[in-house]
Amino acid sequence: MILHDYFRSSAAYRVRIALNLKGLEYERRFVHLRRGEQRAPEYRKHNPQGLVPTLEVDGGTLTQSLAIIEYLDETHPQPPLLPKAPADRAFVRAVALAIACDIHPIDNLRVLQYLAKTLAVEEPKRDDWYRHWVREGFDALEPMLAARATGRFCLGDTPTLADICLVPQVANAKRLNTPLEPYPRIRSIEAACLALPAFDRAQPQHQPDAE
Ligand SMILES: N[C@@H](CCC(=O)N[C@@H](CS)C(=O)NCC(=O)O)C(=O)O
Image (cartoon, rainbow, N blue to C red; front, top):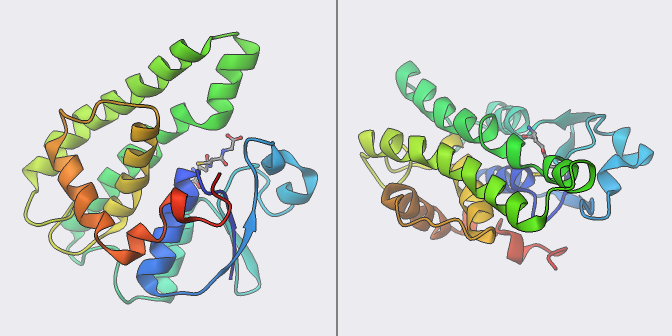
């Protein structure tokens, strides 16, 4: 397996966690997002969207972190990343999608670069934009997670796709100095996850391309 990766990419961070939880070995190809390597024609042959992550596996190429993680879960079922009961699966997916569809894309690098370069929005206002959308998302996630607080993780005592999405989003929130005091449940889930080697080893600062 080859993961096209960038240390600070939260979508790639999700896949790194899933690969670690499954105990899978993989090679890396680093795509330097700040230098725009994701838009190079050579990389777009792997991922026409010009985004990381991309996973080369079983002779094919997979894109979209959630699709990649579900593929890994289907091909390597242990430990499962989704619970068994349909209502629990829906909850886990709802948390994952609230992050992956409703927070992350609005704060993505290309959006921030468009604000900077095309709309001439200055850095303090871009940072406000970033924190605003994280707050909107976390304000909703906190009560959602608190209402189902039956264990250390988003659902119970086993990490799932929801935790895999939450931890990288919290890392991004911290990088932009988003106040996290209003989110005790999110903070305790993050701490529980980072106590696991699979999450810890996937952290941006532990990656070989970290700057
Ligand atoms: N929905 C996609 C999002 C992928 C994505 O946006 N990746 C970011 C890094 S976290 C990226 O490559 N950004 C490059 C850019 O914005 O130019 C997924 O989950 O894989």
